[in-house]
Amino acid sequence: ILRGVAFVQIPTTLLAQVDSSVGGKVAVDLDHGKNLAGAFYQPRLVLMDPDTLDSLPLPVFMAGMAEVVKYGCIWDKDFFNFLAVRPSRQALMADIEHILYTCCDIKRQVVIDDELDTGLRMILNFGHTLGHAYELAGHYTEWNHGEAVAAGMCAAAKLGVSLGVTPAELSGQLESTLAGLGLPTFIPCSAEDYAAAVGRDKKGAGADITVILLDRMGHAVPHKISKNALLKLL
Ligand code: GLY
Image (cartoon, rainbow, N blue to C red):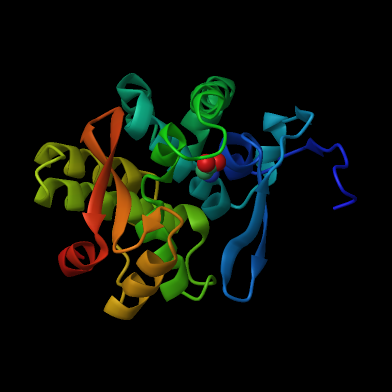
């Protein structure tokens, strides 16, 4: 808008503070889907005040926690373990500055390496390919983004186990942490909604798609698979 106007992000939800305000992705939704008209355009400043989180409804706060847990899964096992023993909003808010800093620092490292999302940045997509299917299945009203991503991460962990990439115990560990936060670990989804989400995923190219899996807690790996094989497994 206004061809290159400088802007400042002032995120007031947990999800925006740890993810969407940082890294320069900007987008608007189209009738065909979420975030489809988008660009990379860095803000001059991201200004966040953790006190704004106090007025969030609990489900909105916990939706942000799905993205927070994601950072532990893909990058930092100790951070995951730190979160796993803080299953309440009160316990998390007691350490919120550390949580915000850790998430933004991980995102900073990833985005500095790959601002335009052609390599490392794809790991931030962990849980999102399937999460988008759940958002679609719920017509974008039944599940918020964080809830869909929580179930998407659990499904991606199970997928990783079936593909021999993810250790089996990791899947249970992730499910119990997310369930402890009141987030869904399973969302029913039709084959059609899976197919629609896989078909329009930005990480798809031709007959193949890159899904992000965990080969251990704290470490994500891109895994190329044919869309047909993925849909069969799902
Ligand atoms: N929200 C994912 C990314 O910024 O790449």
